[in-house]
Image (cartoon, rainbow, N blue to C red; front, side, top):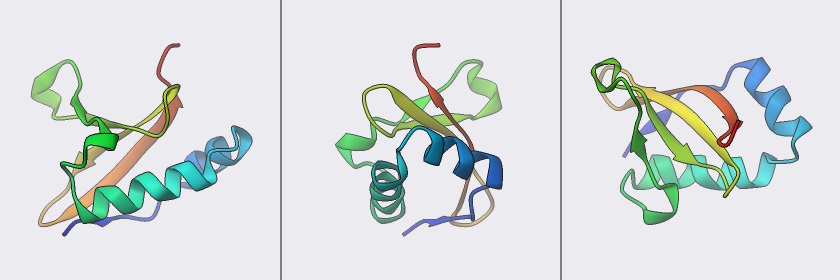
Length: 83
């Protein structure tokens, strides 16, 4: 099981502004329970050596994250996937 660290205030503001609170919370819950859940659609981002990953919030938005030591995940950003 994974533990997602508290999300930075700026990310919370972005999520609220785009009315993604429920979708984001659902996906974070899935991330903590099963990193391989198909609806997360986790991707390793380029350049791969940086080990940055993203998961799907919905069809339009994704969140970027990294794995920290142990079983910790830090979400770094939430953004429009097509911009």
